[in-house]
Image (tube, rainbow, N blue to C red; front, side):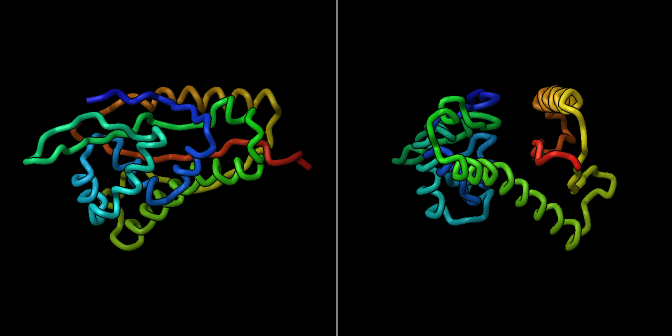
Length: 191
């Protein structure tokens, strides 16, 4: 199948607007591995007809693409996959004069809405069913730290290194998919 790009830089605010939809986040997560709309509907437990509009929106925005076409009876079935492992605003978008408040709202939603959905799913499993494996590492929390600019730069560098290390495919028999999201930003002057 196709290879995913590591990072897709988005240069058009409309693409972020398309991505800023909880149901489309679920679709994107479902299409990390290639799937037809029929297979995706089964995986998400939704009717196929509910997906077509959203899949077309994501494809038109360049967030997913057709990676295979196959003949099924008299029809052509398309198999889709995300175009990249992660997305971020490109320099042209940041320099385009987009209202900073709108850009901030959309960018935060694109990162934090999926994080909230992941956290809710983990907590439902924990509270309703008990975790399938009590030794399985998971964590939910929020922290703050006061640090110098140089220490913050070092932390950001180490975080990038860790993320790059973890992005490799570790697909052995017992591999599990883990989700993590973060916001690392100065929020004010320490008092």
